Image (cartoon, rainbow, N blue to C red; front, side, top):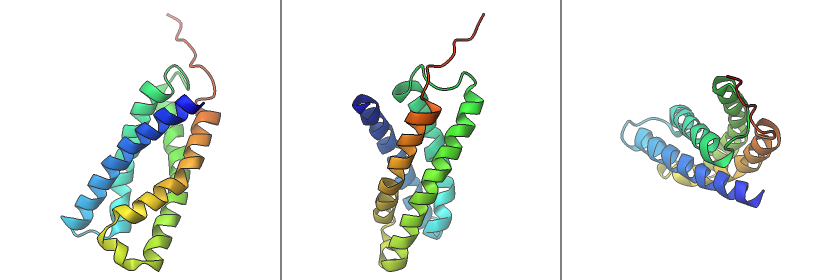
Length: 135
């Protein structure tokens, strides 16, 4: 399980980098509010992490139909994102000046959602070996 968690963290780091770059770009270059910028940055990061986790972290595990698996993964990540966004919003509420550096509240939120996302992914979605398709 430690090896799986390590891979999950590496993939999460890639997702964090993708989201941080997009979030900062939307806030700094496009002038969006940080909470609104989280929607597209989150969706892109989730799809990237799903593809990487399916291929590397949980290879050979999960659902045979990738489309169904993707939906479940997005649902799990959305629950984790609710935890993440609650922490993100709370940090901005108590320290509004951090809106100028949105990657800091993003980091706090990401840490908060990590435990749920890993537990649900490892213990539910990817708990079994993927069924082999009969040809």
